[in-house]
Length: 517
Image (tube, rainbow, N blue to C red):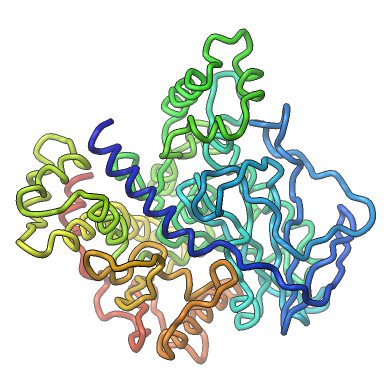
C-alpha cells in the first residue's frame, strides 16, 4: 500500500470517527400528525413548534434487478405509513451509523416543517444532501428543527446510494457511476410533486449540502437532467473544482477510470470470470461488497447524467444559472492532519518532505510546497493542516466562487470560529480551530443532540441560519436585521465578527496554488 493510500485511508477513518458523534438519539414518542401524498397517508410526529415526517420512500428499494439501476417510482402503500422515526441508512461501513448498514431499502427522505406551514402560505424548501465522502452518511443524522422554526422554512434531508452501490461503473450498465446522483434527482422530483402537502413551496427549492453533499450540488448544477429541479444552491466545503489528485476534497472521475475501478471490484468479489458479470455482482451480499469497495468513491463524468466534469462545466459557463451561496471553513485540513499524526505519523522538519511527497508526487511540487509551508520545530500539525485545507478546500472554493460569480449572483463565506466545539472526544495534538464539518452544529442538531455552544456561538448559529434561510427565501442572504453581506466580499463567520471582511480574500496561500493548476 502506498504512503498516499495509507494517509488518505487514515484521513477517511478520521472522518468516520468525526461522524460517530452524529448518530441519532433514541426516538421519543410525541403526538402524531397525518398527511396525504400520492403514495398514501403518512403519519409523522408533532413537536413543540414543528412537525417531522421521517423515512418516506421517494423511490423503490434498489434491490435485486434494481441494484445498479436508475431509481424507480416507489409503490403506494395501504393504510397509514408510520413516519415518526428514521428508516435505515444506505449501506455503509460502521462510523456515522453505529455498526454500519447493510439495508438496501434505503431511498427515503425526511421532512421537517413549521407547525403552521400549509398550502395557503407555503414556505421555502431547503433540500439537504449529507456529506461522508460518497461512502457514509444519512439524512436522519441532521435534525433540522432549528433551521425550520427560526428560518420558517421546510427542510428535507435525503438518503442516497453510497459506495460501490451508488457509484459502480461497468460497461453495458446504464447509469454507470452516477446512481447516487440519480437518487438525488429523484428526491428533487419528489419534492416538486409532494412538498406542498407539508406546507412547502414547490417553486422555491434550494439544494444544499456539505462536503460530498456540497460537491453533489456542484454535480447537479452541471447535470442537464437536473434542469428545473431547484432554484438556488448552497455549497459548503465541497468546491466544484475538486480534483482526484487533491484526495481530501470530493471530486469526480472520468467514466473510464470508474469502469476500471468497477472491474477491480468484480475481481475482488469473484465475478470477473462470470458469464454474466452484472448478474453475478447483483448476487453478492452487501457486507462482501462493502469489504471489497475502495475507500475513495467519486461520481463518474462523461456519462449521460454528468456529461462533463463539474469543474469544466462551470469554467465554460455550462451550468444551471441559479444564485449560489458558497464557502469553506478556515481550518478545513486540521482534523485530517491531527488524525494522521495521532495514528503515528509525526510531522517534523525531518519527516515533512516525505509527507508532502506522498500527497504531491509531481516532480518538483513537494519541494515548492515545503518552501512555501516550512515546518519548524513545534508547528508541524498546523502547517500540514494548512496545506490540506488550502489545496483541497480554501483555494478551490475561491476559484469556484470566481467562476460562478461571473455568471450568477454569488455570496461567499468563511466559517472561522477558532473555538468551534470539537466533533471528537479526546485531546488533539494541536488546536483544531475551525476544521472540516465544524460549521454543521451551528445549522443542525447532529443526531438530535444539541451542541454545547456558548452564548456568543448561539448568536452566531442564529445569524448563520438567518443568512441561509433568507437566501432560500429571496435568493439574497441580506435582511433588515442582518449585517450587510455585499457580493464579492467574503463573510467571516466567527463569534463577534459576523460583518464582512474588509478584503476580498481571507488569508490563504491561493496565489501559490493558482500556479499549480
